[in-house]
Image 1 (tube, rainbow, N blue to C red):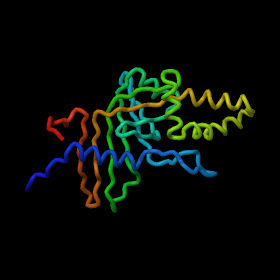
Image 2 (cartoon, one colour):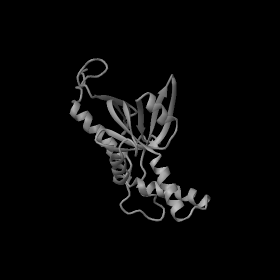
Image 3 (cartoon, helix red, strand yellow):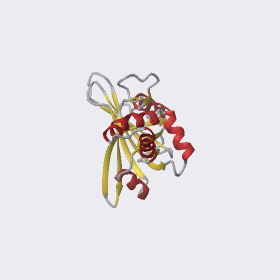
Image 4 (tube, rainbow, N blue to C red):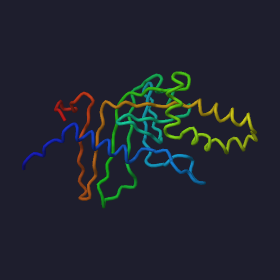
Length: 203
Protein backbone atom coordinates (compact mmCIF):
# COMPACT_ATOMS: atom_id res chain seq x y z
CA UNK A 1 0.00 0.00 0.00
CA UNK A 2 1.34 3.43 -0.93
CA UNK A 3 2.21 5.51 2.12
CA UNK A 4 0.12 8.65 2.44
CA UNK A 5 2.15 11.82 1.99
CA UNK A 6 2.41 13.99 5.08
CA UNK A 7 0.69 17.37 4.74
CA UNK A 8 2.96 20.40 4.65
CA UNK A 9 3.47 22.53 7.75
CA UNK A 10 1.65 25.40 6.00
CA UNK A 11 -1.38 23.20 5.26
CA UNK A 12 -1.52 21.87 8.82
CA UNK A 13 -1.36 25.44 10.16
CA UNK A 14 -4.19 26.52 7.84
CA UNK A 15 -6.40 23.63 8.97
CA UNK A 16 -5.72 24.51 12.62
CA UNK A 17 -6.49 28.18 11.99
CA UNK A 18 -9.76 27.16 10.32
CA UNK A 19 -10.75 25.19 13.45
CA UNK A 20 -9.84 28.07 15.77
CA UNK A 21 -11.72 30.62 13.67
CA UNK A 22 -14.80 28.39 13.63
CA UNK A 23 -14.83 27.72 17.37
CA UNK A 24 -13.50 30.79 19.20
CA UNK A 25 -15.78 33.34 20.84
CA UNK A 26 -16.77 36.55 19.05
CA UNK A 27 -18.00 39.98 20.03
CA UNK A 28 -21.74 40.21 19.37
CA UNK A 29 -22.20 43.13 16.93
CA UNK A 30 -25.95 43.36 17.62
CA UNK A 31 -26.58 42.21 21.19
CA UNK A 32 -30.23 41.74 22.05
CA UNK A 33 -32.16 41.26 25.27
CA UNK A 34 -30.72 37.80 25.90
CA UNK A 35 -27.15 38.51 24.78
CA UNK A 36 -24.37 39.20 27.26
CA UNK A 37 -22.37 40.93 24.54
CA UNK A 38 -20.54 38.01 22.98
CA UNK A 39 -21.33 35.11 20.69
CA UNK A 40 -20.66 31.86 22.54
CA UNK A 41 -19.24 28.96 20.60
CA UNK A 42 -16.90 26.19 21.76
CA UNK A 43 -15.18 26.28 25.13
CA UNK A 44 -11.74 24.84 25.68
CA UNK A 45 -10.43 22.80 28.58
CA UNK A 46 -7.34 24.47 30.03
CA UNK A 47 -4.94 22.32 32.06
CA UNK A 48 -2.50 23.95 34.46
CA UNK A 49 -0.36 22.36 37.15
CA UNK A 50 1.90 23.05 40.10
CA UNK A 51 3.84 20.53 42.21
CA UNK A 52 2.19 17.56 40.47
CA UNK A 53 -1.30 18.90 41.20
CA UNK A 54 -3.09 19.29 37.83
CA UNK A 55 -6.18 21.45 37.36
CA UNK A 56 -8.54 21.45 34.37
CA UNK A 57 -10.99 24.29 33.72
CA UNK A 58 -13.53 24.83 30.93
CA UNK A 59 -13.21 28.38 29.57
CA UNK A 60 -14.28 30.49 26.60
CA UNK A 61 -11.46 31.69 24.38
CA UNK A 62 -10.55 34.14 21.65
CA UNK A 63 -7.84 33.95 19.00
CA UNK A 64 -5.35 36.05 17.10
CA UNK A 65 -3.83 33.60 14.66
CA UNK A 66 -2.56 30.64 16.66
CA UNK A 67 -2.37 32.69 19.86
CA UNK A 68 -5.21 32.15 22.34
CA UNK A 69 -6.63 34.65 24.81
CA UNK A 70 -8.79 33.75 27.79
CA UNK A 71 -10.26 36.17 30.33
CA UNK A 72 -10.00 34.47 33.71
CA UNK A 73 -11.02 35.51 37.19
CA UNK A 74 -8.76 35.11 40.22
CA UNK A 75 -8.30 31.50 41.28
CA UNK A 76 -6.11 28.42 41.28
CA UNK A 77 -5.57 28.43 37.49
CA UNK A 78 -4.05 31.93 37.66
CA UNK A 79 -1.94 30.99 40.69
CA UNK A 80 -0.70 27.89 38.85
CA UNK A 81 0.32 29.89 35.77
CA UNK A 82 2.26 32.36 37.89
CA UNK A 83 4.32 29.47 39.26
CA UNK A 84 4.36 27.25 36.16
CA UNK A 85 3.58 28.89 32.79
CA UNK A 86 3.55 25.58 30.85
CA UNK A 87 -0.06 24.74 29.95
CA UNK A 88 -2.10 22.47 27.72
CA UNK A 89 -5.53 23.08 26.21
CA UNK A 90 -8.06 20.90 24.40
CA UNK A 91 -10.75 22.11 22.00
CA UNK A 92 -13.38 19.77 20.63
CA UNK A 93 -16.94 19.81 19.37
CA UNK A 94 -19.62 17.94 21.26
CA UNK A 95 -21.61 15.85 20.76
CA UNK A 96 -19.70 13.73 18.27
CA UNK A 97 -21.67 13.56 14.99
CA UNK A 98 -20.61 10.69 12.74
CA UNK A 99 -22.36 12.24 9.73
CA UNK A 100 -19.57 14.79 9.28
CA UNK A 101 -15.86 15.31 9.84
CA UNK A 102 -15.23 16.79 13.29
CA UNK A 103 -11.86 18.13 14.41
CA UNK A 104 -10.20 18.50 17.79
CA UNK A 105 -7.08 20.40 18.84
CA UNK A 106 -4.63 19.49 21.59
CA UNK A 107 -2.47 22.53 22.32
CA UNK A 108 0.80 22.76 24.25
CA UNK A 109 2.53 26.03 25.03
CA UNK A 110 3.48 28.79 27.42
CA UNK A 111 1.01 31.11 29.13
CA UNK A 112 1.51 34.76 29.96
CA UNK A 113 -0.74 36.83 32.22
CA UNK A 114 -1.87 40.28 31.08
CA UNK A 115 -3.40 42.34 33.86
CA UNK A 116 -4.52 45.93 34.33
CA UNK A 117 -1.47 46.37 36.57
CA UNK A 118 1.16 44.79 34.31
CA UNK A 119 -0.07 46.28 31.02
CA UNK A 120 -3.17 48.48 31.41
CA UNK A 121 -3.26 49.62 27.78
CA UNK A 122 -3.14 46.07 26.37
CA UNK A 123 -5.58 44.74 28.98
CA UNK A 124 -8.18 47.38 28.11
CA UNK A 125 -7.57 46.99 24.36
CA UNK A 126 -8.34 43.27 24.54
CA UNK A 127 -11.43 43.91 26.69
CA UNK A 128 -12.70 46.32 24.07
CA UNK A 129 -11.78 44.17 21.06
CA UNK A 130 -13.97 41.27 22.18
CA UNK A 131 -16.61 43.40 23.95
CA UNK A 132 -15.65 41.82 27.28
CA UNK A 133 -16.10 45.04 29.23
CA UNK A 134 -19.80 44.84 28.30
CA UNK A 135 -19.88 41.09 28.99
CA UNK A 136 -18.43 41.59 32.48
CA UNK A 137 -20.85 44.43 33.18
CA UNK A 138 -23.80 42.24 32.20
CA UNK A 139 -22.55 39.24 34.18
CA UNK A 140 -22.00 41.35 37.29
CA UNK A 141 -25.39 43.07 37.14
CA UNK A 142 -27.14 40.37 39.17
CA UNK A 143 -24.51 40.69 41.93
CA UNK A 144 -25.00 44.46 41.93
CA UNK A 145 -28.74 43.94 42.43
CA UNK A 146 -28.21 41.34 45.16
CA UNK A 147 -26.00 43.73 47.09
CA UNK A 148 -28.38 46.68 46.47
CA UNK A 149 -25.55 48.81 45.09
CA UNK A 150 -26.45 52.10 43.49
CA UNK A 151 -24.80 54.57 41.12
CA UNK A 152 -21.13 55.15 42.03
CA UNK A 153 -20.90 52.12 44.32
CA UNK A 154 -22.28 49.87 41.59
CA UNK A 155 -19.81 51.23 39.05
CA UNK A 156 -16.87 50.81 41.42
CA UNK A 157 -17.91 47.21 42.08
CA UNK A 158 -18.06 46.41 38.35
CA UNK A 159 -14.73 48.06 37.58
CA UNK A 160 -13.00 46.40 40.54
CA UNK A 161 -14.18 42.91 39.61
CA UNK A 162 -13.39 43.37 35.92
CA UNK A 163 -9.89 44.63 36.68
CA UNK A 164 -9.28 41.72 39.06
CA UNK A 165 -9.36 39.42 36.00
CA UNK A 166 -6.36 38.46 33.90
CA UNK A 167 -6.01 37.71 30.23
CA UNK A 168 -4.30 34.35 29.84
CA UNK A 169 -2.30 34.58 26.62
CA UNK A 170 -1.22 31.17 25.30
CA UNK A 171 1.49 30.98 22.65
CA UNK A 172 1.53 27.40 21.31
CA UNK A 173 4.70 25.52 20.47
CA UNK A 174 2.88 22.35 19.43
CA UNK A 175 -0.68 21.62 18.26
CA UNK A 176 -2.07 18.19 17.42
CA UNK A 177 -5.03 18.22 15.04
CA UNK A 178 -7.26 15.13 14.97
CA UNK A 179 -10.13 14.70 12.52
CA UNK A 180 -12.86 12.16 13.20
CA UNK A 181 -14.29 10.97 9.87
CA UNK A 182 -17.78 9.66 8.92
CA UNK A 183 -16.33 6.20 8.17
CA UNK A 184 -15.32 5.98 11.88
CA UNK A 185 -11.63 6.44 11.09
CA UNK A 186 -9.43 9.19 12.48
CA UNK A 187 -6.51 11.07 10.99
CA UNK A 188 -3.96 13.09 12.90
CA UNK A 189 -1.28 15.65 12.08
CA UNK A 190 0.92 17.96 14.10
CA UNK A 191 2.07 21.57 13.86
CA UNK A 192 5.28 22.33 15.70
CA UNK A 193 6.72 25.78 16.20
CA UNK A 194 10.18 24.39 15.63
CA UNK A 195 9.24 22.53 12.45
CA UNK A 196 9.62 18.97 13.68
CA UNK A 197 7.24 16.40 15.07
CA UNK A 198 7.91 14.09 18.00
CA UNK A 199 9.54 11.49 15.74
CA UNK A 200 11.93 14.05 14.30
CA UNK A 201 10.36 14.31 10.84
CA UNK A 202 9.50 17.66 9.36
CA UNK A 203 5.87 18.49 8.68
